[in-house]
Image (cartoon, rainbow, N blue to C red; front, side):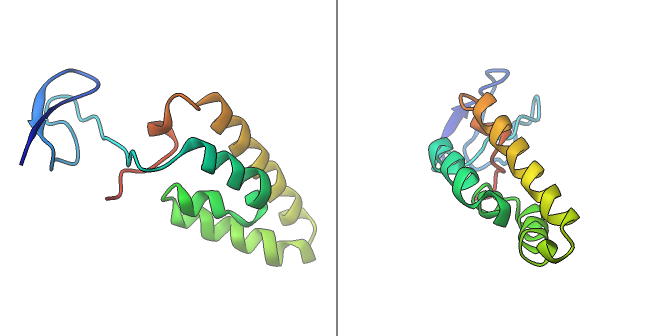
Length: 106
């Protein structure tokens, strides 16, 4: 067990802690790449693959269902395109802050 410093408040805590005990800051999985996330949004956004990569499985399943079955009804298919476009814009805006995109599952 090693002691690390919190990125938000600077307090020391265990590297095994899921969140800082002082301020509650939750670290993210640093192994994830924003570039890969943006490429997944661009090419497979309507299928929600980028949501699975980011650790947001519930949203990924919703996008997958809307992106595949939803095209029969047109409206859900259009909605998932808008959703993917918004995810692309949010990803570009937060390219320097991946902790806002990825969950902290380890």
